[in-house]
Length: 170
Image 1 (cartoon, rainbow, N blue to C red):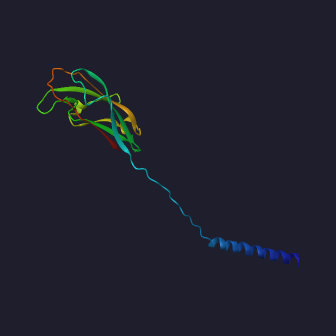
Image 2 (cartoon, rainbow, N blue to C red; image 1 turned 135 degrees about the vertical axis):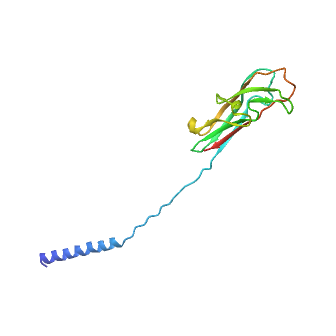
């Protein structure tokens, strides 16, 4: 065979192969499969306290200033949370029905004043709000403290107030 014939056969062979590959390449279909893996973590929003001393047996005839509970907040909510505290009597140790004697007190939460008297009896006071105070994801060992001046001249009675701590996820 002459060089021209060999060259012609080689060119035809190359064109056939390239054309065939092109045809096959056009017929190939590509696909993808996405595997989504995920999991969930449920919201956890709790608040609790540990009494310090005997807050249910305070001596109201003397002056007192100090911690009565340690508060533990838990929240895993990224948007944040808020804490409200409510005094049933508006910052007073109140006697039982019919006894109008009372002992007023002041309170602090995490060293900040809590204005129960300004809010009024049964109305909540917000003591922490992540939108205002910055985000935190739970806090432990927060001190709740009270201060009062006792009065030994009060009628014999059991004087009390109920403090309610509430946590709200955003």
